[in-house]
Amino acid sequence: MSERVNLFGIELDAVTMRQAVDTITQWTDHGSCRLRFVVTPNVDHTVLLQENKQLRDAYSDAELVLADGWPVVWASRMLKKAVPQRVPGSDLVPNIFSAAKTDNPLRTFLLGAAPGVARRAANKIKNRYQGVNICGTYSPPMGFENDDAENYKIIDLVNRSNAQLLILGLGAPKQELWIHRHRHELQADVAICAGATIDFLAGEKSRAPQWMQQTGLEWAHRILTDPKRLARRYAKDAIVFPQMMLKEWMHPSRRQKTVVG
Ligand code: UDP
Image (tube, rainbow, N blue to C red; front, side, top):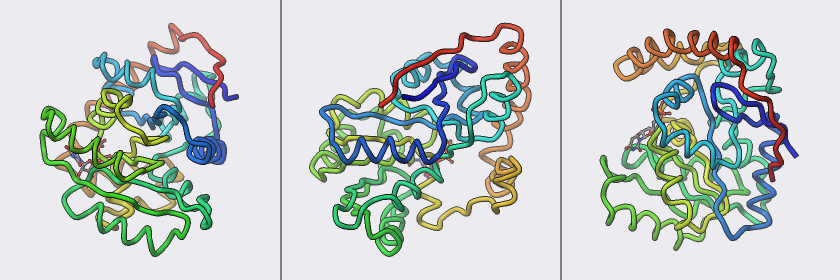
């Protein structure tokens, strides 16, 4: 059972990293006749979601909604709807890998990142996590999401790999919209929308130093390492997010209790 708090129109699961890992591990251990998917909202996702109904629909069907960024956790505390801690996708995935059992390796498919990156991530994962079996990788071409043949190919690849866990590294909102659209065609137990996690696992991109992650400055590291792509996006977020906080403070959304898992 997990409490959910409604913040900015998103139902966030108030869980710790440990609880999220245990829940997902239970789902993959026991198997399921339907795919459950996990999203990890950061500030940018919460801003995107305000004007994107499809993304809101995807979020409302997600089985776990985990606060990825410190600003989302801070906002939840300031608005008296506290989630216990940050559960970023790029930490969640390695934690699930660490918890996987060596006598029954977790069959995992890596979907996304630039050509070759997922395969490099697979090699590193193989050396580092004995409980994980990377049963497939694929980097779809640009625009794949609008190409039926390509979508069919990906679904077939994932299903034939017999993956229990699907990691999506396609960026937001593409990964959330894609998994929401195709969730009934996929046979994996769990899918995690994990952004740049495959890049991090491959060593293609570097995470911010621990002190920056712990003090809520990871966004600054990301801007510095990818200014062309992120500066304009973060500037917009810096204007819109405080307005969203003010609105939420003046018109708080209802607090809810929901059963998860
Ligand atoms: N990506 C992809 N296919 C696409 C678009 C993006 O594989 O059509 C990958 C890209 O190579 C990178 C990741 O998605 O590995 C972007 O993750 P990030 O979290 O930086 O994206 P954001 O959610 O911040 O846009």
